[in-house]
Image (tube, one colour):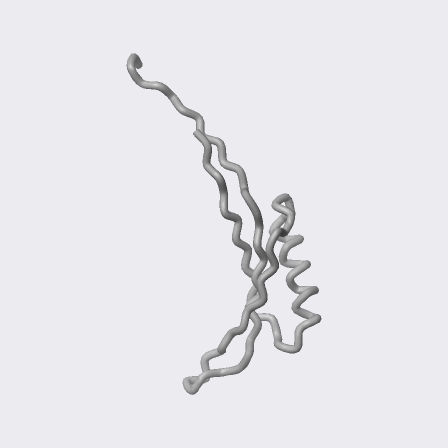
Length: 79
């Protein structure tokens, strides 16, 4: 088609953060309350399975039980 340029976009993960959600107690309605610990600058090539393993191991060093391991991967988009 004339007049239209096809642009390929590149996506690069800028960094990874791992957050441990730890169960810190219960509220008045017996729902869990959470406290969190964040770890920045995690290797972006780490697989989800490895991140979960590392998060679980680090949670074992905490006094509160693990609720969830969360991963955040912000990305840079270049045209």
